[in-house]
Structures are given as structure tokens and as C-alpha cells.
Image: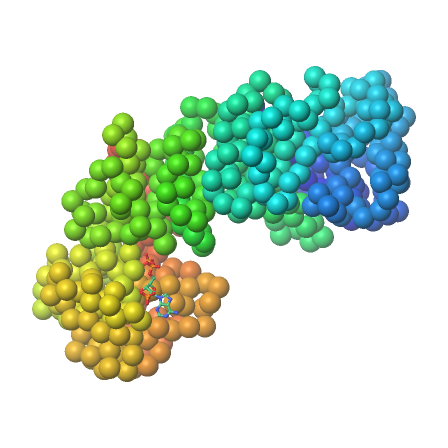
Length: 502
Ligand code: ATR
């Protein structure tokens, strides 16, 4: 069972201890990052295992390996020796583990560790990429059988992460810690058990004076409660959300919370993918069953589907894919999510006699346009790149135009409902308004499908003019409930429909 390791990166032992106390419930092992301590504090590290009261790893990470220790190697070895000195017969009073790098060879230190049951973690860090034969590297790390091999690499793309999972599969017999750093590697930290990794490193968020130990580390509480790390096994069903860059997304919160309440043996992980083809390869490697597809892959995923549902074919966008015996099946849940949300908001049964402006011509705009057509609305599509607006509008006989003064003028004739689908105004760039030259009369219903921030500049302006407004949160939740149906092959629990807030 993979353990949760809390990295302690405070400047003093007292501060580290304070943090440990607060997060003890989520911690199996602590790592004392002595390189982060103030020089005076380093003299006292020997006392820490007793203070901590749980197994502790002693690590003094060098700058070149991503740590803070910039002193001489001799002084570092002396400090390591100080940590292991005066070993006691009760192993709980000693460091349980010591992290010694692959290139550090100090037999005296290793003997001292072994004599009193301190296990050696033999570590290798590659901050530049992934070794082409990682399995061989993992096997060669341990000098003596009772050592734990540790490999931490910085993937440059999702294919690199896939190679790490492959290496994990090839070294099942080796006791090891294996992880990818950075945004690409977050999934390796959640799926440590799946990788056969001894532990997963975490750092607390929002604690003053406790910097993140390595990029991509999760908060122990998030790992333990949201991702239910301790329940993940080889049988756990894996689902994912992918996009690039994978921006603010509420869906891991949504799905993991629902899985937790429903006691499903399932986890939902964020996986940034630079291209959708490598995401599919990756998913096949680790056995992901279903994927929420977001920007910019909603259209580009279609050629890679083995089975394309009618919905996806006619809309030209796909936001949900499922693994099957016959390959990847694509669905679209944005479309029903959007129309349900719009109809409830407007109190309408359909869009007959309504003149509608759709702003944007990306994957979401395609779903919106197809639903507006199905509900018999008359629309105009406006987009920065006019050709894309035309492409969406033509099949439905909608009007189209550019996001320029002429287009904005035309909006006056399509102003019963305005639906903003672009990413302009989304966090972190909240200072932009794609409709800055449009003057709201106060009679329009205005929908902005962005949900972070809850009110974009565009929505705030519309509201100030007296318009009724809606953001994209409701649509997101509704499309996620449809996605749940595909993922779990059953209805979304009705009791949760209006109960969850993220
Ligand atoms: P999604 O799948 O969420 O619709 P997308 O396919 O990347 O995402 O589409 C993004 C939309 O936002 C497009 O309509 C895009 O306009 P272009 O087709 O001209 O690229 C629009 N968009 C993005 N940045 C924009 C900006 N700064 N100004 C105006 N429109 C923008």
C-alpha cells in the first residue's frame, strides 16, 4: 500500500513540527528536508524522529537535484552523519530512512544507517527529461537489496510520462519510489499505488514559510480526501480530464466528490496533454476508461475516434470519450448540458421566434449552435476569425460575422439572447470583454459560459445595464452529470443533483 509522505520544508524544526501536527491524519511518513532548515537548526536534526513520532526520512537535497543545499559535499556528508549518529536500539527513535543520491558513495555512512535499521533510499533526479531506458536505471540504482530505489524525473511531454508508467510495469519486483514532477506528473503522484511506488510526496498548501518541495506535489489533504489515495488499488477505475494547458477545472472536484459519496472504487485525475493522440496512447497504457476532453482537443479528437456517435458527427465536437473493446467512442455532453441550462434559465420550452447571438466559434460554440438550431432559434455566429464563424453558421443557415464594429452592429438584430463561448475574460486574464463595443439595452438574456470568475467583465456590464445573466457553471455541472452516465453506466444520483457546490 503506497504511503503519503509529507515533505517538511520549514526553516526551523519547530515550524516543521507545527505543520506535521496539523496534517498528521493525512501523513504516513514525514520527510525532513534538512536543506531547507536554517544553518543553526541543522545542528539539531538528530532529535527530529522522536519529536515527530512517526517514520521520518532524512534528506539533504542539493541545488542541482532541485533542493536548497548549496554547501560543500563534505559538509553535507557530515550533516548526514550527524542525523544518523547516536543511534538508539529502539528504531522509532532513529531516522527510519535516509535519502542518499545515486552518485554519493560513503560506505561508512551506509553501514551506520544499516546497523540501526535506517533504510537507504537511493535516489536519482533528472530535471531535464526521461532516460530512454528507465527500467534499467531503476534496477541499477540499488547497491544492496534492502535499499529503496527512487527515481524522480521531469517529463517534457505526456509521452515521457507514459514511458515512466511502462518502466514501472517492467520493474514490479523492485521496491521503489517512482514519480514524474511538474504538471504532467500530477497523475503519477495520485496513482503511486498503481505505479508500484512505495510512497507519494506531498507538501502542504497555504502554510506560511513552507514552500512546495517539488513542482507538481499535491497537498496531503487533497490527496487523501479528494483523490482518496488510500483507497486506490489496481482495481480502481480511472477517469481523466485532458486539455492543454489544463486550465482551472472544477471537474476533478465534481467527479471525485461524487465517487466518494457514492462509495465508487473510481478516481478522476487531471492529465494535461499537448496533443490528443499522445493522450490516447497514455490512456491505453494505464487503462483509463473515460475522458473528459476540453480545450483545445474537442474537435481534433474526432479523427482518432473508432466510433463516432451521430451527435458528435453532426455537432463536429466531442467532449467525452469512452474506452471500449472496439476502441474509443466519442460523445457530446456539452450540447444537452447547454440546452438544459439555457431553457431553465430562460423559462422557455424552445427558442422559436428568438434571435440569438453566439460569440465564438470553437468546440463549445459548435455544441451551442447545434442546440440553438435544434430548439428552432435563429442565430448569428460572431468570431474573431470570420471563416470559423461561417463554417459553423452555414449548415444551420445562421448569419455570421467578425467580432468587429460591423459584427457588433449586426448583433442589435440578434439580441434576445447573447451566448458568449470564447475564453476571453477567463481567469487569470479577467480584464478583457469580447463584447466591449456592444451596448447592452437591458432587455437581452446574457449567458457567458465562463465560470471562473463567476462574473466576467462582460456579465458585469450586462448586469449593470439591467440584463438577466447566467454563467457557465450550471452548464458544466449538467454536462458532467451526463458524462457520469457514460462513465459509470448508470444514472447520476438524483439526490446529489442540486446538492453539490464547488
Ligand atoms: P472551446 O472548445 O472552449 O470553444 P477553442 O476551440 O479553443 O475553445 O475556441 C476558443 C474560441 O475563443 C474561438 O472562437 C476563438 O476565436 P478564434 O477562432 O478567432 O481563435 C476565441 N478566442 C480566443 N481568444 C480570443 C481573443 N483574444 N479574442 C477574441 N476571440 C478569442
